Amino acid sequence: MTQAAPRTRFNSAGLVRLLAELAVAEVADPKQDFAARLGEWLDLKDALALYSALHAIPPEPASRAMPAAFLRAELVRVRAALTAGITADTAQSVGSALALPTPLPSDTAETAADFAPFHRYYVAHQRAMAASIGPLRAAVRTALGRHSSALRQLAGLDAVMEQALAAREASLLATVPALLGKRFAHLHESHQRARDAAQADDPARWMDPGGWLARFCVELQRVLMAELELRLMPVVGLLAALETKSTELQ
Image (cartoon, rainbow, N blue to C red; front, side, top):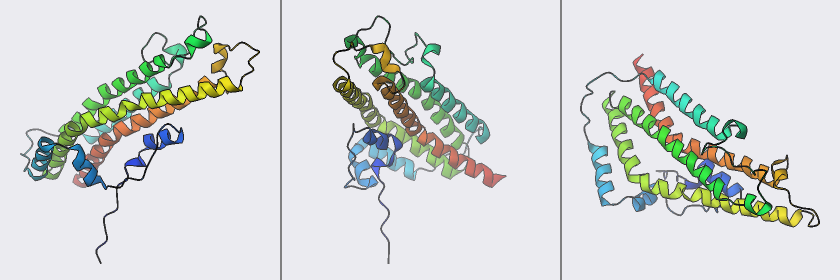
């Protein structure tokens, strides 16, 4: 008896699970499988490009492929650099758009409870990820395009998928900072309810161990790390295919 193909879950990404854990996003079991949902995201032009990539006979490569080991090292470097930017100590990155916002000595309880700096911080890291990961993904595709016909076809397919889903991906990832804004507001409101109203609310204490803002900053960085891994997934998959082929040829 023929078994049905397993349904691909859209909520399996670590970023989605983490947002659900923070109670800022609902995760429902999808009613459609991957192919059906993908069909809704692609317009006719994208569908034709995808069909062409799946059925094209890639031309023979004109030059030698970039070594898989070099690209693996580049992946490690890019991941490490972006991770360091996310987890950097605030004192080491003051003045940078990538510096984690923390209350200033001049801040009042009202001005320090503004989420806008954290929104800008998150978006700045998203731009840094896109600027570093995009060229790396293209480089791995180029390397694939200089190998077997199957890998050249995979490279073409990835190029089409990246272009076709770029707007959808950007739209979805743009909602993440707004969802974190809800978490920020929730933690601040909980802090307000729990504190002693007879004492002044000192923003400098919010970053103390156990403080509500210190907790939020940890969660914010966890979400950024989850998004980083999500954005790297296509590169990791393409590179795995390249390394497998390179190993077979040894």
